[in-house]
Length: 268
Image (tube, rainbow, N blue to C red; front, side, top):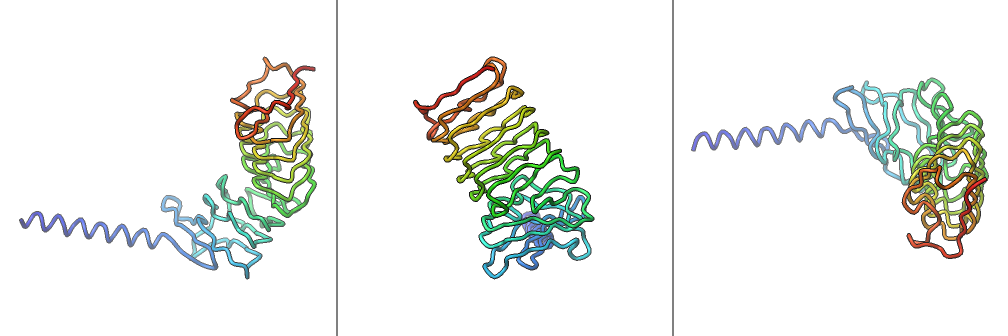
């Protein structure tokens, strides 16, 4: 009996201790939630409280003497009111879902002392300029990806419903998964010679696209790349079909079903 009571007390103590430790690892300040990474003793931005009265946000370099180094999943996503975000100098990692679907966002700024990221005309890039990471929805309606960019990151233009036209730089090699997913106003995309891959669901839901030319340098197109592109009736691929790694139903579909009027032509 005594052993049973002791075990119960030990269990209660452990639960309380774990709960306290967990509570201590989360800090809330200025509409932001930070979670402590014990292995690095640094903070990750894990949540943001969206307020109509707050339109600009600057991430601090540190909280409680510990560096703020990361934006976690949905850490700065789904805001209806933010127009400007500034990243602190210590941010070194951003989750793929870290800064997404902020419909009022015009620009993302970065501390000039940040070693991992930079901003060009309000668009977020890797420090070396080779990867376009996040495009703010309200930045511009027509955008030309700057020379030197090699990768359009997964979800880089995710739900950027304000964008109507995009032209890729001659240096782009990869369009990531869901890169232009539900970019609902997108009417024209100019793909560059040198492009090698288009990711899964890359243009899913781009309903205003009507035609597209895919260069002969293409090597792979991911599954459902043009899912629900219901008006994309003309696709010209300047390479033989047999020489491309094509994912399941990569071509234009309507709710996953084939579109009879759609034409896909392969070859030089």
